[in-house]
Image 1 (tube, rainbow, N blue to C red):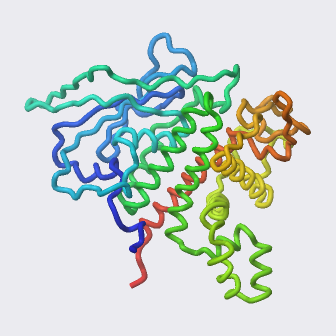
Image 2: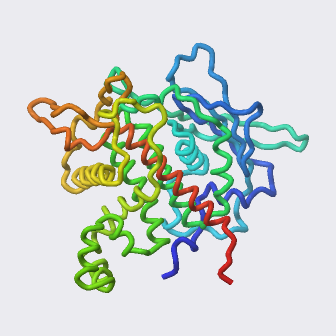
Image 3: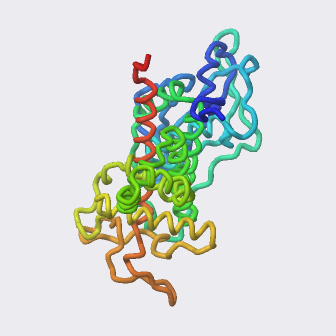
Length: 387
């Protein structure tokens, strides 16, 4: 089989870069958020897309769901392009949904679009937009708590201009990587959208977002021995000591085979693309998630174990991971749990079993994915000196 990173069709929204020669019909969609998106007057044209910031409507309340961006594009029917076949390149999203998911990841905000409305450019140059019957708009996220599970997300301010370098890089990436980026971004965007009402699903989707990217990254590198050395250094050293690199390679192909498809891949990707700590984090050291390699590996391993238990054994996430984060000593949200135990009903959990809050994990996942995206862009633009 060929390298999946060099075959197939790119994501649907990326294919649109090929269809710029017939700007006579297209669509427009409103993207909704509970955050703010600031941009330059007149919006941004990025490839085939036009994104325009929308001001807050009269009577707007902070954190209220509302349309914040207008996304529009012209296109022609791709009847001269090969059609994608099967599910290998299928993201399950329409063009405007793919862009909304990617923008949600880039901006770090909740973002979801309504049904696109068709628009046409008339012979005199005027543009006509047609309303859609029974227009469906996104529903506002709901929460049973008086404080948010993801603090600071609602009414956050994002910069429309930050979309450009990421979106403009898409046509230069391999088709496979554009599909995986959209799939990972979808998991991240959906996690943000449902975190307040369904935080356990948000945990699962955030882990899945990393797994999508980690699988694509591993398929490109195929350096399984290094993955084991990175995630299990003591075991790798012991194997090399007893039988050299050949013994390690043998173990990688046998004993570590199943792990390479799950925990090792997840941890190796997480550490390679680990972002910086959040801006504006609590200054209380007891409330901070340690950013050291050992402590971070332990915390992320616990997250992955909890996720696997939920998927394969139906074991629910610990209740403290599903509620708003505790406050640190300075009043800011803590990133970890500092009490000896936390309880719900007649069940308690030691703090040692609670790896981090959902909010800081969402920060980690977004940072990892954006750093991976940046690496893909750098690789795509690096001169080929092999010949």
